Length: 422
Image (cartoon, rainbow, N blue to C red; front, top):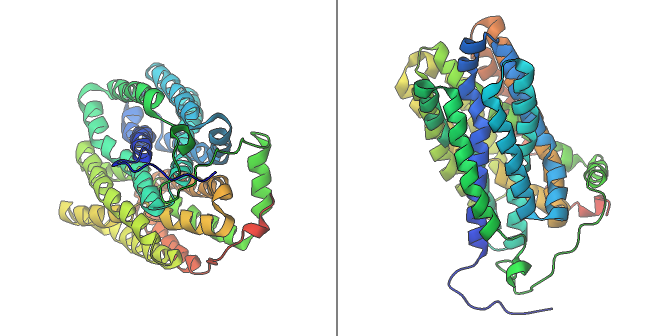
């Protein structure tokens, strides 16, 4: 059925994008909170940095692992129901956290339940919504939503660090819960699953199409999708470079930069402010990356992003030992590149496998990202205890990024949808 969209001054898809943007911002802020907790938990309970890093590592891994299954949930139950369910799980995880007394409780609430619930509201959600509502400006929209996820991790940190420093970490937990409670009615009232719900076509088209019902099993369909691409070199190159991406961003810098600053006698609020500064520039850099991915070869974008990130990480140990000016330079430069890799990676995934499969396949690529982040989160904490500093993890991550830059150029920029089983 072909219909012309009624001319209007405002497309409702932008309201949907705004709600998803705010939800991802809050969810990502929750994901970043453990990095603020490291020193507080060490002091209060006497837990080692390696054990706390282990909890964060499991959280990051499950955050990624839930991605493909989240894509299936979004297709089967709808975006609004999935978002509400995930927020309820977050509230349970947060509400019980102030009463913990042992590492295993932190692992259960923050590592397992927190990882799965925040992972359900991650990049797969943004990609699913962008693919449904937008043809025109899709790269820009994906860039905006990706930036919200990374920026939320960073912008929340100064507030949470200040509350933790002045009023204790438990009060910071209550602030996060309040933000989630504000989001619940907004999602319930204004969120929509598909343009068809509003009688609209995706922006950039004129065809109003009823969404096809989800076919397959909620658990088996994502696994079958994974098996269908395991012989595809493009998939493995995208997953491999994204492993390096996670290794060098939320797993390393997002988890350990505040603690590394503490080792250099930099106050926790100042360190969190550096991450917030990264968040501001990430919002600019990743949104601009989405715009660029609509216009330029995504492989070369990845080459430059990974290469420049690698150089900045090699520079970081020098900046930590020199002063605030050098750290500020690092924060600005690294922030622009924090997760700018996502829009071109999504573009290459959609081009290779088609937009129908892109969400679920990207979910598996995101698993690789979080596996890399999980490795860095635990590995950096272990090496810090072993060697007494973060210099080796930071420099090693820099060289890993330089390797990723070279690998990115080997990704084939062509359709491979025929290779994916229906």
